[in-house]
Image (cartoon, rainbow, N blue to C red):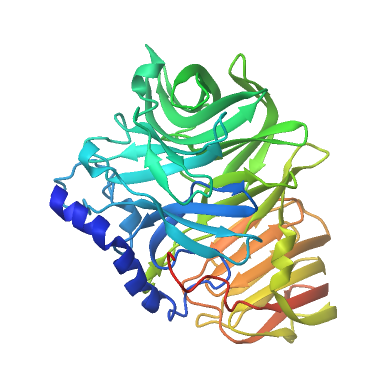
Length: 496
């Protein structure tokens, strides 16, 4: 049932109190990841306004401040994609942008909620967006604004807020919405959302995902817009730069366009596993030429990427990690920060940022043969958190047996890796290297071809022994395992 305006205002007023109350419950939940970025409590998902500014990495993220219930982030849509506040599946509520900052992407300080919905203008949900500096050097946040009468299919629009120089206080632009459907003239776009700011050649641009409705066919696309003033409150439509042709996909969600070395890279979340496209971008003629493509992460537990550039010129990406169940006081976290590069053969590569090494504690090394007739101990894991650097030479496959309630395993074969219910293919060869991060219910694996596999487990990895066993013939294994120091990574004084 749709709440009244008074009820929604009450949710806004109680948001901080609800977060603080739930944080006491969330901190005690053994399922909750320890070193992956997460909100103090409640339901969260997409990393939105991420930016490096004045020595800090800022993380803003979608947050329902009042509940951690499953599907709490889907307050805007029923289970059957029916946009109807009168439908029995409509859950109501609000979403805001939570906010935190960090000097090293490992230790985080929770900050006051950045953006609240403007209820008097029919806004209930602040969706995916981006944070940048406009041409005047003023911090801005641009996002898709949604409400009961602002449907994501055809009537949502794009709003802009201005921030102070520390990104702590924000106010909406008087000209909101700064982009609406009228920009497109006779071209018909639907499912239009998820703005991402791009700067090039001294100009400001914006991309948005959409679905283009045509006379002969419909396709999921990315559209380009150019700023017409230094404040970024006025925009012109340049055209469609990219299409997922011949794909039955509702839209190109959460698109990013980033220059890495001498190539441009598109990241897109097409209602499934995240994909990348490497090529050249022509801003003047609104066209992206694809030269290579592939998967960012083979798992649907990873979604909605966002990218920033830091003071060292690194392009760093985060994504939402989702699919948790039976949580208490929380739901959702953000992936580890991944540094992006383009290989000599023109494909996207991802590596964990070097700052994550600061988590490493006691070290265990193993080198030797692993057979199928007896499990080989690799190391003892504490509190379900570890980093494992692994090198394998094998004929068939090996499995890593993790201590958990269900005896979860990671399988590594000549041409695949699997963790939990998720599986990634890779080039078939005798030798492979990979880096595995374990964080209670989250596994993130960096593969040697530059792709990744994320898996969310139904039960947590616990304290115990991690073992290896061959499946088929014997395998040669080298492993460097580190337990991780995870205490005091998040500020306890919430919003102070």
